[in-house]
Image (tube, rainbow, N blue to C red):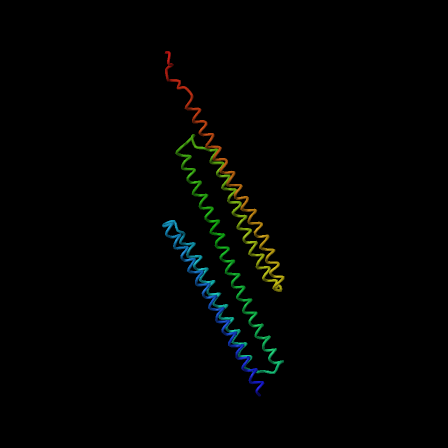
Length: 270
């Protein structure tokens, strides 16, 4: 009886320790979520102050909504972990025979795994929704920018008539098309990266194999991003060189025109 009493006391101490650790982790997670939201809100307020009427209120509200839903999922995860701990404590209190204890413990673990899988699926669905929203916003912004630019060019064409710079117009139009193509590639890459991570999660690999494959994904992802950024930079350098050359050419023409004698000006000896 004394030995059983010591075992019960030891189990109670273990349970108390696990409860304390669980409460600490839950509090840390809630604190991290709150701090992330505060930092984000402060950043948005700074942008609002700087941009004034140009601040993107629709984007702010959309991301605020996504953050609130992420917080709800985080809270759900904490509650589910607490429920699982309660189930394990209740099982220990029952003091079942070993075989029955193992059966019920396995059932608790299966239920906990099912809840984790469902929560991860909800996280993935939310991130997919956010990814699709921002991709659509980016495509819409690019289309609006091009429409505004074309409208401005048409207005200038009508005002300037035969003096309208058709060469510069065609060049900039081509550059915008190439920028749009690179942006579309960037969005497709982001979608492919999300799909690759989802496929990895669905494999349910052991931790070491999972970490190795995830690191491989991250390396490939970084390589593709760097290659695309290099193409963006090369495109902008090409545009900069073109406009610099155009400016030098225009200056040279102005100097040449200024040095030509006026046909209506009389000769000095006349």
